[in-house]
Length: 104
Image (cartoon, rainbow, N blue to C red; front, side, top):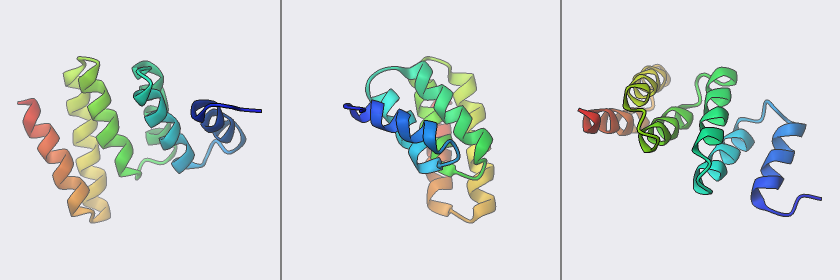
């Protein structure tokens, strides 16, 4: 039986790979534990499976920044801006625009 939050989230994602909230939680847990490569793997999987899930782009971009991969972060933020603009989520769009502006 899974004992850590990470193990629990991995188990949920294995059972329900299409559950965007569980995959997002797993990505964030990897990020919080410092496994940035694994976190980006989950963020990328989430973007591929649920391309309209805005938080994946914002936190994916931040994770890439932490990894020193600024150009990739810029690309992810730009994709996120498009996604959130289409969805009409002005708040998330402005957060990503702010993060993008801080890269310059």
